[in-house]
Image 1: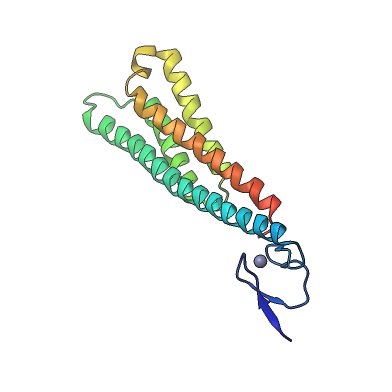
Image 2 (image 1 turned 180 degrees about the vertical axis):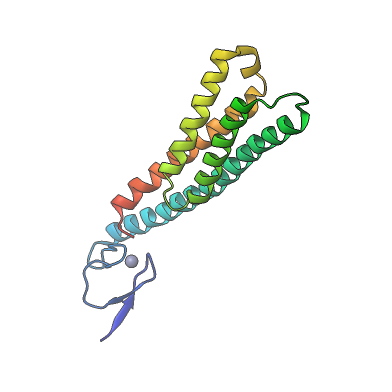
Length: 169
Ligand SMILES: [Zn+2]
């Protein structure tokens, strides 16, 4: 059995196939069709690696936010002389755990564990804003960066998904 290397994905293919079984490279297509395929294939690889980078960034952000929640719990316990604010500690514990779990499972189910913590963050900021607008405005740039970065990562994931549908690799 003689084989040929696919010019796009470099997989070994049988010599008589008309399309690469891995990336659908058109072996029997025109030169133009072949170049278009290769261009799209390279573009797709970039889209995928962008999405992977975004995931690593989101993971760091989620761990950072959960660290902030746990720090809050620690500080409230250490600094309260009379009674501990059980309500805010519980809220921070739930959020902190939610962010840690999202960060840990992010690569398993990227879309869900990007949208879920984003929902928690936006919900939290909204409640903060309703309760105390002045307090909510504190660190607003930091908050915007977090929200913006997570939204951007969701956008990149969606883009990679669309490319994956177009090209089955
Ligand atoms: Zn191929």
